[in-house]
Each structure stands twice: as structure tokens, then as C-alpha cells.
Length: 201
Image (cartoon, rainbow, N blue to C red; front, side, top):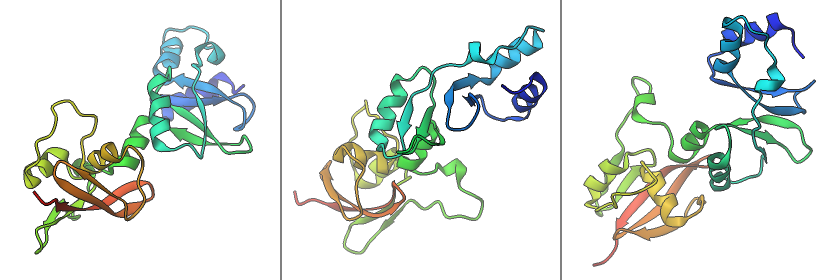
């Protein structure tokens, strides 16, 4: 219901490619607006009808686990989910980038200057203390693991989740590729630290 000038300001000021749209308030979300589509109408001199451009986005509860979130994102018309609590109040949005960071952690390019980027430390007993964000190819090289060519993960944390088939709790272990992987530390739902111990031959 915002006026054209207010909508134009929001579209030009935002750095996001998609914006959630509500009908009268935050608890009445109706979908997602693709910024470029709205700007295209404005720049061409056409009459902007926000409702006509809104695309339906799935509404999910804030209690949904990450694996189900990923499945819902895969089937969505737009890569964005609208999150509500048990009372139906709008809490925020989720994108594929949010889920990837929650599961795999930040990437090396996102590490601030001065922070360590040492992903793996060899312990005296031959086990490895591994950062969950360690690129899977680097970890495979360190541990001597032969990875399948087709895989859906890119980090050490992703390998562990793939092997467990669920988001783990601290202390959980799984055996894969001749190694036992123990989840040593979690940062929220993200696997932060992993202890990898070689299994007996």
C-alpha cells in the first residue's frame, strides 16, 4: 500500500535482489518482489503494480530443521522462504546462502584479515582437529580420502552431515571413508570443529 515514491526509494536504496512484501503489516506477508522486475517497470515509464509482480514464497515455521528447509527451497518459485513463529508472527526470511552458511560455515574469502585460516591441525596420536569450513578437497588430500566425483557438499562439515543424514549434536560420531568423525563443537547449528580419527584397517 506504500506510495510510488516510497516504493521507488526502497527499490533504489536496497542492495538485495528480492524483497518480502506485506499487505498492511509484517504479519501479513503475501510474497516476494523481484527488485529488477519492479525497477524495469519504473524505468520504462509503466505503471507499477506491486501486487501483480509479487511471487508466492513458501511460509515455514521457525522450528523447521535445515534439511527440510533445503528441500522447501529447492521446490520454491523464488529462492526465499518467509519464516513465521508458532503464533503466525513474521520472523524474517531464509535464503540458500543463509542455510549454506549455517551448515558449512564461512568461506576462506569471507575470513577477515588477521584471522587464522588454518583448517586442520595434526595431533600427536595421528588424529586431525578440523575446522568445519575446511574445503572438502583439502581435507581429502590431508586424510588420504578418495571422494566420489558426484557429491552435494563442499566442506568438511558437509561431508559429516551427508554421512549422518541429519544435523548433529555435539559429541555425535559417524564413520565414513575409513575415518571416524566426531562433532567436537557447534556454532548454533553449524558444525564448527571436527575430530577425525583413522579407523583400524
